[in-house]
Amino acid sequence: MSRQATNLRDRIHDLAVRARQASRLCAEISTRDKDAWLQRAAERLEAARERIREANDRDLREAEAKGVAGPLVKRLELGDSKWRDMLAGLGDVAALPDPVGRIESMSVRPNGLRVGRMRIPLGVIGIIYESRPNVTVDAAALCVKAGNAVILRGGSESIHSNLALAEELRAAARETGVPEDAIAIVSTTDREAIDHLLREDANVDLIIPRGGPGLIRKVTENSRIPVIQHDAGVCHVFIDASADPEMAKRIVVDSKLRQMAVCNGLETLLVHLDAARTVLPNVLKALHEEGVEVRGDERTCEIFGDAVAARESDWSEEFLGPILAVRVVDSLDAAVEHIRRYGSDHTEIIVTEHYGSAQEFLRRVNSSTVGVNCSTAFADGYRLGLGAEIGISTSRLHAYGPMGLEDLTTRKFVLYGDGQLRE
Image 1 (tube, one colour):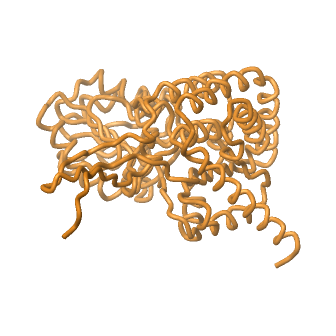
Image 2 (image 1 turned 30 degrees about the horizontal axis):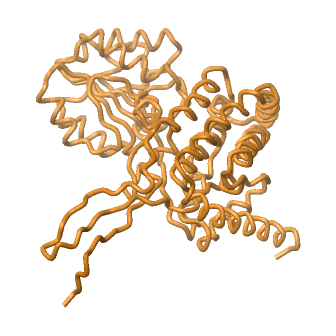
Image 3 (image 1 turned 30 degrees about the vertical axis):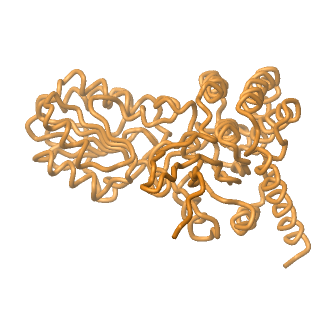
């Protein structure tokens, strides 16, 4: 190993060791002090907004010059709306009940021994993410509120934004008694830093990757540390035979057009055969007028002349842009089968006026978020009342779906006795 590689390994190891030490202190910090840090972090970020915006603009210029894909550039921008949501998320997390120390599932054994489960922090959590500098703030807020330390490794395309944000978060920690190293950031863009971090199993308890399939695969295949992964967001809306046409159009349009470069955006539309000719033309016309390319099966192409023939690969594609795959299906059974075959366990919605169909869809489709008569865009921790989210898990251990505070804790058994012996 070269001297440069050895130095990088040692730097990552030192970062992880300091995060481990900080996590032990963070686990014992009062709710009041954690909330004070969240409040001070919001104040410091707002005061430093212009400097952070300049760093973000630099990232955007460099990303465009390097030819970074459009969806990634879009996720990189800290626009006014994203900035407001990011700061509001800090306040929302502060307002959430602190799960640490809460005792649940208390029961009494036949010998009088009381047995419960107490929520405790996971320890040190490594977040490896692409673009999206707001993840720096969201992840730090949730991890620290849940009593953990966090190691943040953002993508090279957002390095200036991430460093500027982390500087304010760490400064707020110094001012409020939170261990500064509870918010650790990998300051190098060297990709080997990820490899070294994934070997720190003695100091890091969990890795959460957020990004494209390449990043997820790299982390999953190389990590010595447990990984909660988020596969692609191949989200579906199924328009049932009984669907209200106007509601169906509004839901599909919002699910697809609200933000196309996000994992909860609509990628495949399924339509019951009995609703296809009455509902589908208006829905697809509205999307087509907004520049969305419709890739349809044979029946879709017959109904909507501007559609192009879909390829087999389109049914499992996360387009993250103005393309929508559309299939007409014969039944709810066929819709469920399609989702099971091509979906990524992210988000699926049924539009229906039939109670039985709604309940059957909810019961049979086991993606991480399943809904009735609403947009796929609600598959988001902020919108689901989590304050913010650390990510969306599409693997079922140890969390599933948008992950909030409780998902960043585990539970230990606690025993209350009055002299019981095992005899």
